Image (cartoon, rainbow, N blue to C red; front, side, top):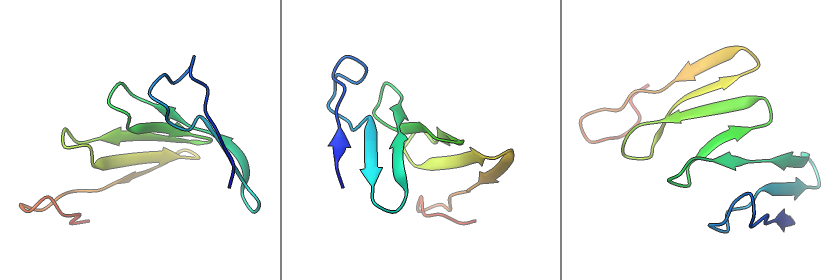
Length: 74
């Protein structure tokens, strides 16, 4: 699976374009902490501990909650 690194757009060396033989090519964007914030058709929000808590894709939203041990509860 080839990865493209655009050091002007993403100076930390995170993959900015990924090509997969089944899924094709897609772009990824990241926030200042290196967390994925967007993939084609999807946006992500994160808890302060870097775990994703919400994904919005194709107009639908999925939200996850954590238990006291910071594990996914729902």
